[in-house]
Length: 570
Length: 65
Image 1: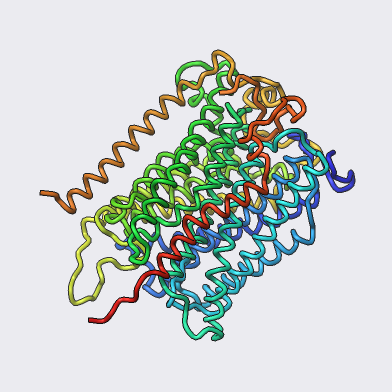
Image 2: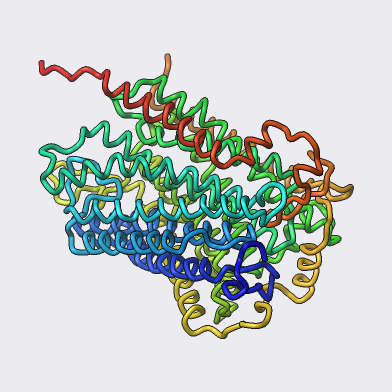
């Protein structure tokens, strides 16, 4: 099989794909650490949700900032990046029919990221770094916080180098024909964005660390810090977007037998991500005084819309490919492909909910909030976390959970327990996230700030009454708690499966789908069908697209109206 | 849209370079991870980082009244 030694590989009993045993080890290690981070982040999420719900007001301000730091880093950095490392190993070996590039690099990757994560967790839990994830200077954390993040970033860079090395040896050894598979191309886009991200991490964190240990007398300039830090902070979320889209394509194939309608168009969309999506970092500086309007508008509007176009291409081609596959199975009607989809398969449910939540929730709000003029009525309000919880949590995290429902049986070769609960889990998590995000968005529209434990300023001499936001903050609290419980159910089921689950070694995994669905999907996957043949036109997806565009227009222009109401022109 | 049968997202397209004749420049770019890496770094670095950094350097310090 490719360039793998026979004693260092196995053939997957379910998919027939080759699995490099060295890569398999690192997929497992990274996935386990990712799930541990998700566990920590989910517990923190419940505490935060019950604090922002002011009727409960669980944490005091110091505790709030400590826990929000813990939540942000575990959810946005550790959980996501460990899972992405697992995806890079999978893509550069199994999907390219090739061996792992370097075990030494892989140990370096995993070791540095693990040490970095432990250092940061210690620093935050010990109360030595309650500076939120952004750690804007001159706020100062203890040195192990910055050093831990630097080690984590260097580890991630080694993982990316190993991935590029994997691409090199696979091409050199001709383990595949023609172009690399689309999913690997998506992972390549994520890896390229990761290089940009990590360089900015080094640029901003090394001088800040030197300041924290007294080598530099003064902290970095605050405006410069914000510019460079967001090259790390926002771009790390763009790695997520690429990885998430790659996972969508992967799960669409695995759960419905889908094929992309046109590979070149999909790859072109990833190219747009590679070139332009990192410019979105400028959103965070839209009210900063140091950079001018030309820089802001070029980076957040003109150039970035090419990346938005890419998201819309993926947002069309992924469901369209599912629709074509369903129609190939003989399912008719405008939306029969959706109503008869394998919704009880948590891999499919998580992937499709992720697509809908990311597109309708994250996409529409992201473009609107990123508009220079509109941003002024939304900046630093709860609308911003309302946006990124439907992109990163409802989008990426949910997609990664769906991936895990296949990775654990296929790579760990363990079956999930309590399968009815597993089938329900994506819906619990997705519902909680959407409810919370709507609460955040509505509260933010009333001016409720983000990153604030007590918006009523309890005990202050001048009373601040934000009472009208109370129902929306309750939505936030209830939705956040439901979402965190959904994440905890995922963690418990996954840990149970990995350590106590029944093994499926030597046989195919137990399908999540009905025997008939499973048979038809597998037969489609192994046949050379053409998604562009007559009778498979994705009419239902076209209708969904127009509903999306209409929703986009309504939301976008409502925000212009809201802006006009703030500053009436007479 | 291509009329050619497409492969699953996880599998390689069947055609090799020899099979399909001259390769389109866009396809050449898409098949070159090193060029993509260079472009993916340089384009946002110039547009976001360098331009923003220069603007910050050119910002005059506010004078006290």
